[in-house]
Each structure stands twice: as C-alpha cells, then as structure tokens.
Amino acid sequence: MKNYFIILLILSLFVTSCEGEPTDWHSTNESIRLNAKIEDTKTRASGTSWDAGDAIGIYLKSSDQALDSTIIQHNAKYINENGSSLFTADNESETLYYPDDESLVDFIGYYPYVEDIVDFKYPIDVTVQSDLPNIDFMYSNNAKELNKTTKNVQMVFSHQLCKLVLNIEQFREVDFSDIKIIISNTATKATFDLKTGKLSPAIEYGNIQLAGNKDRNEVEAILLPETNVKDQVLWFIIGEEEEMVYKYSLAGNLKVNSFNRSTSYTLNIKLFADEYQATPAGGITDWISGPVMDVIVEQTYESPPQIKGSKKSPYTVSEAIVNQGREGVWVEGFIVGGFTGSKTGSFTRDPYEARRSSLAIADQQNETNINAILPVELPTGKVRDALNISENPFNIGKKIVVRGNLVRYYSAPGLKKPKEFTFTE
Image 1 (spheres, rainbow, N blue to C red):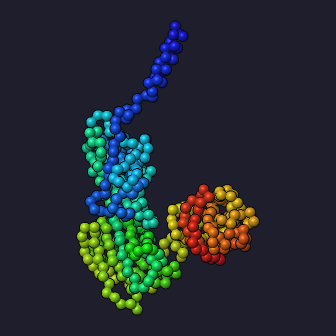
Image 2 (image 1 turned 90 degrees about the vertical axis):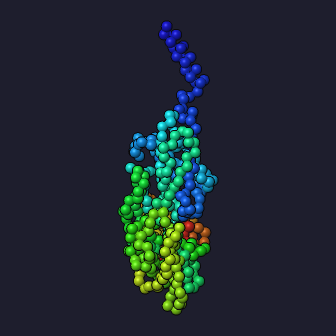
Image 3 (image 1 turned 135 degrees about the vertical axis):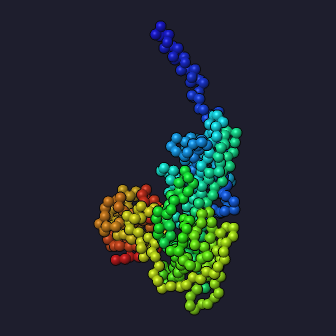
C-alpha cells in the first residue's frame, strides 16, 4: 500500500510538470499600455516631446484608497523607447495589470524616475544644472477611476517647477563658454508629496551656477517656484579671473515678484560697460503671455558669490569623491602617487612603476589609504606630459588644482578629461 501511494505521487508530479508551471494570474490579463503627454504647450527643458530612454515612475492604487504601503503597485519603472508618447515596463516585475474584476483604479505618475522614494516624498534638488531634463520634475494624477476595459491609459504630466531663460547680448565678441552665470540666494532643495500632489516650501537656499552654451547666447535654468524673489541676484562673470562682472538684482526690477509653478520666464539681457552706450530692451513672459519690461544689467566691481567647484573655491578630494557627476569643476589636492594597473588597488608611490596615463591625488600629502585617493586620468598631451610622475618624479608631494569631470575612473570615484591645471604650492 505504501508503494502504491508513492507511485501515485510520482504520477501526479509528472502530470504537473507536463502541464507546466502553476498558473500566473496575470497571464490571462493584457498588460496596461501607458501613453503620456506633457500638458498643453508647456515644453520640457530638452524640447517639446519625450526623449528615448526617459523613465517615469507609476503608482497603481484602488480609486477608493489613499496612497500608502498597501497599494497595488509601488513605483513601477516605465521607459520611453523611441521618443513617442508610449511607455513600456522596464521589466516583467514592473509591468502593470488591472485587477481581475472590474474594480476601479487610479494611476499616479512622476518624472524623472528615481529608485528610492521614502514615504512618497520625492526629493528635488536643482543645484546642478548641467542636465536640465534630469531635474525638470513633472507629475500626473489625471488617470482616475479606470478598470480593465481601458487598455490604453492616457496620462498627462504637468511641470511642477519653473524655467528661466536668459537671452544675452554682449557689446563685444565674447566666447559664451567663458561666461559664468550665477543666481544667488535662491531655493535649491525641496520635496514633492506624491500623496497630495504638492511641493513643499524650500528646505535649502544657496547659489546656483547655470549651464552655459558656447554655441548660442541662450541660457536656461530649472528653478524651484518661489512666492518672493526679492533676494535673488543674477551675476554674469566673464573670465576665469573675473575680469568683468555684471549684476542684476531681481528686487524691484521685475513686474513679477514670484516664480510660479509650470511657468517659463524669459529675460532678454544686454550687458554693457561705460565705454559702450546702447538702449537696452527686454521682456519677460510666461509661456502664454506676460509683462514686458526693460532689463538693464550694470557692470559691478563687487565680488560675486563663489560656487563650490570653481577655481577660486575648488573641491577638496574628499568633496570630489562624494560629488561625482559634476562636470567642468576644479579639484585641489596633493599628488601622492600613481597606479601600476587599472584599479585603485594598484596605487603606488614609486614613480618608476607608475603608468604615465594616470595620477593619484589626496587631501593629505602622504596619503596611502586608497579610499581617500582620487584617481585622475591623464590624456595624451600637455596635461600628461606635465603631471605624470614617471617622467616628473619630483611632482610627488606638490599641490595642484585641476579642472575636469567627476566620474568613475579605475572602478572608483575619479576625475576624467582634465582640461587645465595649476601648481598651487
């Protein structure tokens, strides 16, 4: 009898294996198709449509339910593959399905996607302006009370921040890549509550350097909305040594005293000096209509605010390690050695063993802890010729300030594509 039951068990397992895996309840349902558009004519920082590779986050919940830990789907990642309005799940585990019954659900969405969101509070930081689409936060909550009869979900995303556009005219020929523009005393960080759809008051203020464009004189910025801009000042700094500085205070000069959500402001600016007289003209409008005003930007001899990572206020090595992703910034440190291989573990202080193509700098002159060392790429050319320790062994121990991009190098936080350097001691 015992053997009989064993045979039945084996036969049942065989039948199960022939019939396949246990039923996936989602397999009987068609996955939800997401179509997303940007509200009205309001344009994203990078253009009028989505870009291939854009990622949005989606929360799926019952229509009668608050956004909490028990909802149907948390922060599903959907990707735009070709620049159209269609988004698809990043992988099967992210795919959205309606409930099997015809119960109603709501879709809450945001852009750009971040993996970790605590208590449905989206962190917003506009300090770094080098990649504007990456900070152009948008929100969608229009897709409500839908069920499985609606296969294509139409989501509308609206801007929650504001955009500042500066059209600059200078009286002399100037390479706009040499112009540094700073807006001081402005909001830099806040949080957006995905539950309520509201932006918090700013939690940090500071100075923001705008990303320039060497090919045209138009500069754009994504900023946090503010009810009062009276303390904000625009600084235009020409030359690394601040040969010319222009200052424009927003207090009392604009016909608007606030920067509003989902609004683009344009300033047509003419910079001038005493030897050049012209009639400045300018206007400021939102994306639909707005006031028109004259904008006069005066040259000043005041010292402008310093942005961390500038030549006058370079990052330390420890600061550079935790600020990866910044481009065109200055870092100061001691040359402490080089590398024999392509990992930081190959660090050496022996100049005759070190490669010519890389360098190691640190905050301490005799540092040997690889976790406190920043590997620096030395591309072929004058930077490599002057800095590599295999041909310049007496560089070890010298202090330098070097400008480049903070990105991973040698499988660690590093600095690549150095353009300029100066020995400081």
